[in-house]
Length: 459
Image (cartoon, rainbow, N blue to C red; front, top):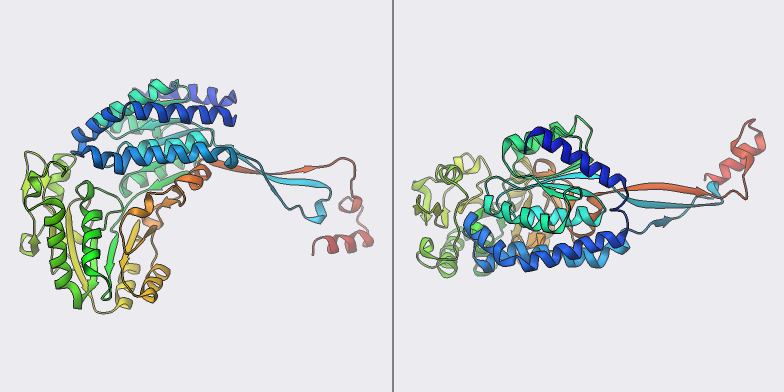
């Protein structure tokens, strides 16, 4: 789409929103139910698109994308009626007699910009929350996952008129045109670099934003941890989607005493989960494109590889790789890896680890493996991060009962479930004052008696 077409689309959505058609809860529920049914009917096409873009198996596609989307839809269909109700709050005596309440109201026309690593999930999940809140939406999926983008466009065009929900495909030119328009809310998932550009563009119209970014998410393994279980769960979380997960454990930060045994267990788990030849495993995916394939290979120091390292440029695959004796100054620690490479670093005390993590950019996720409750409490209380797990990885994002989002350099705002509804909702604070009584004390001329009464009311 060109600039004129995008401008016209935004105008059409604004006109539609101003008709009030998206406000009735019944209309929102009908839209969500229609979307759910359409996704279920097209799940095979979704699987094929994800296979083409990222090499995902049907099982992984349902577990990590389609299944989570359907779960969010079910949750919002169930809970939107209660979330959309006015919320009565206590009224101060000084405002007698009146009713005070918070009125949930949609922002209006929202823009949702999604990435390529979980292209279906991260496009449709925020859209569900936006629809539930009563907004219109323009979805801009990534150009790096074109097959999934086409399926998203097909599904949404079957479900909705473009004046309500529309898809804009394309690359940087379309992104720029969209960001030059006046939206009422922008929801962006992607890199920190582009996130800064989105925030800068949004500032032109003072448009509120949610930024879901990333960062180097640490995985602390304390000396009391169950190393066999820790290795199993770390390997799952790290190499899922070939490491192309924003909340994947970026690096292991473990007690020096247990490092060697932990690495031994991780190697064992890689062979167990992905076989001795991961590149021949039909359920092991691929890197999204040549650019990122080359970038990841550039982060691997062959002298420090203790497992994996094999790659196939024809299939854009890199085997699950472990690097030992890594230090924070190494190239692999200078940026988010976003690939199947796991550096292992060590500390001598938990306080040292906490201090080092807090000296770095706030990560999107943090994980700690420990059998010591006090160690878990210390880390979760003192470290600054978006969210995480104790004795597991990545599963904290797979629920509609908790918000998911970043903190500081890893983003701002949250979504999923009620938090998602709140993200796309402005709560109007309203006082409905009754007319049958009108206390005179606030009006001039001010009198001493009125001043005494006012002080009593406002205590």
